[in-house]
Image (cartoon, rainbow, N blue to C red; front, side, top):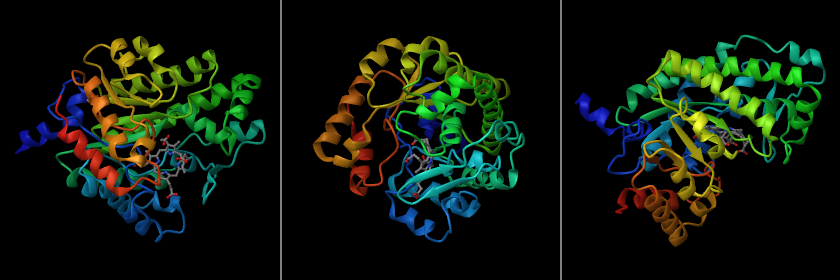
Length: 347
Ligand code: 1CP
């Protein structure tokens, strides 16, 4: 019985560089706004953040897309910004606006960022992981966190600007403070990821969603170097746990550097998969690339894209996913179709 369960975690197999007969599939933001069941749970809570601190709700919402679509992985339902909340930095999710964070006004606000995470806010996440571990034995369970740069964009910008001009300007004008923030967040992120691993996740994904439009040096230091430090520390403690990196930067430029500590790169839809395949070693795992709008459109657009992606990746370790999160307007039927197209694909 035990062996069957291990065999069935096809997502983990691919992360460990083994190509499986069917391609594993999960979707970034697979639990959330496009699902009616999600809204039903959400309306019981005064705020999104309250829901992210409720063990039962987190467990239930994580399972919703697994029950509905039979994805090959569950990702713990939480949010990257919970970490700011656990550092006593005020975060609000405002309807039709999105996340708004209390940005620092003076140097002392930054210097007095709490060192320790408030575990009363994070323990429900770890408890939910333990519950989920018992519920889903045949699928992978993923933990996650933002990368330091992406967390810092929310903190410095307060409300994200389209060109990230606020944090970039801050970074050029206040190099020491910027380094201070990145180092502090990196420590908290590592701790949060290790706690999720100890609670039982099979792999972790680091989201560096906002690592784009950055100056080359800024990207090397605040994005890549910070992620490398975190990944190396995690690998030292838990070498068996694969690490997936999602970023919108030109990550393929840095492939040679990251392959020793990152097990899989999750690609945005603007990347040419043929190029990616040619650059990485054959066994290295790639994830993602389908445009979320193709999933909204459905029909032949979706089917042709799925076939194109799977044909390109047919000999590589690969995890089917989107280039970014599922959009709230995504029809439920298209998600069912997607899973069927991926499972029925014959090369
Ligand atoms: O109901 C609501 O209005 C809240 C919407 C929502 C949801 C469903 C937010 C607010 N966060 C989440 C869950 C979430 N966020 C998960 C759950 C696990 C999953 O199913 O994937 C994850 C992994 C995240 C990660 C996250 N939050 C990222 C990185 C991934 C990405 O999409 O780039 C980012 C940038 C955020 C910030 C965030 N949280 C929520 C919003 C509205 C935003 C701003 C970005 C956006 O508009 O999507």
